[in-house]
Amino acid sequence: MSEIKTPAASGKSGNNLAAQIYTRLKADIFDFRLLPGDKFSEGEIAARMQVSRTPVRQALFWLQREGYVDVHFRSGWQVHAFDFKYFEDLYEVRVMMETTAIARLVELDATSRLDPLREIWCVPAEHYLIDPGAVASLDEAFHTQIVAAVGNDEMVRIHQDVTERIRIIRRLDFTKPLRIDATYREHAEILDAIFSNQAGQAQTMIRAHIAESQAEVKRITFYMLQKARERYGNREES
Image (cartoon, rainbow, N blue to C red; front, side):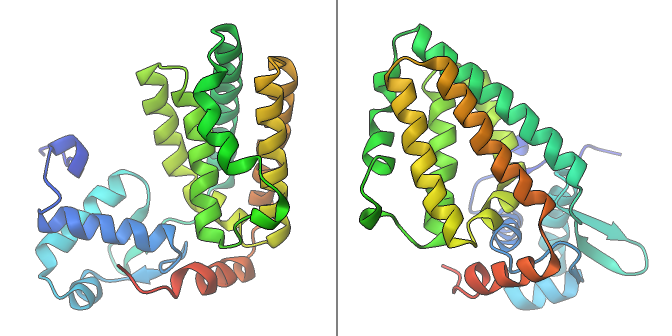
């Protein structure tokens, strides 16, 4: 059997119909229009997107390969259920990469590369954003830019892969207003420590910051998923 390649691996353009469906379905998962455990058929997706089943099937195979959906002979397709051990392992990898990046930035005297982050996070409380989707995107960019600032392309690639795989969990974290406020405060404190060349303190802070987000994984309930769908999933697709 020939290898099933994802859009990125196969070099397919964004104009390819299967690639467009793949992108839309992944957005449905990340935006909670499709929840973990939700079941659906190729025909339902094809009807909703007004396309044939062939490109839908190809897009679903790509998503299956990446672990986002499962297929069952009798019941059709299903969004992959949460595997908490899997997410905890990814969080551990993330902590190792980001603490290493902080130490390297201080060692290289390259903390100025993070100046744009201070403009976003080191602001008065009245300037905090409240939209959970916007804050989730900024939070992801904060951690990504810390790693990217080191200048190691392979490190960035691996971190981006981990980031995408835990994105749905991290976005759930921002359904709570208190978590949004805490994120602003903690990011500002981490940046202050980095710019003060206190690598050890910044590493301790980012470990604690990520650990709290990781703890939210263990508190997830079906009710929280439904609330997330209300906040994120009712938006009209662009």
